[in-house]
Length: 302
Image (cartoon, rainbow, N blue to C red; front, side, top):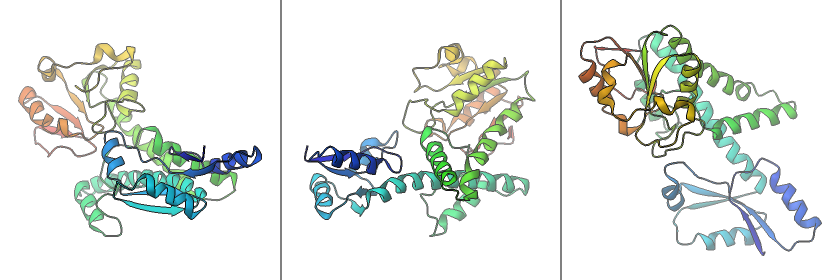
């Protein structure tokens, strides 16, 4: 093999280990590292039209090999050392995780002063040093394995090197505190009927891997709450929850007291209209941390 290209995320230091193995065994192979840029629900689009591609290569010749491979796709290639490429990926996910925790804490402050978190978000994103693609929208705690994994990785290597990184140390703590909020609220409503709407943690995918909706559902089951799950795109659920999943909302929606939307998804954008239609003047509670819906006087918002 003339060139071995790693196109997956690897922990910092892995490239060097593989490189040393190649040299030790006198294998005639050049090693190149491209951190993966896969995003669930947009994989093909992101591959064909990426913002840029980071290339970890030791020499200009190896970098030119990658340029030839991708010569039909127009985007920016950034050549860095393999070690920098490894740490760039960890650092990006660490920053995204920090953005989510930060806006969640700002949202709590905003609500206590009757400020609108969505307006705060718009103001932050309008600052050119932050930008409109930043993770600064009010919402639930971050989930999925990628952000948590890389924040944990950065925390561990900081501890191993005796580096005092207080922000990195507390990102996961802040995120866990955000996750506890809904559990603490629900503990006061054991006698209410609950529906979790939206089970995948990202738009455009049917995966429930690391889904906080599923984790919450399991907790409700364990604590004997009366609850239902709704997501038309989800086919496979844990055996424990299959009997709680409903497709036909008309039969159940009028009986639900509390609706929970942990994730913002376009397919549920008019769900609040269904709630007011079927619930009419009944007292209804809505947990909508992403502020998917405009406020309605007939609904109580957490």
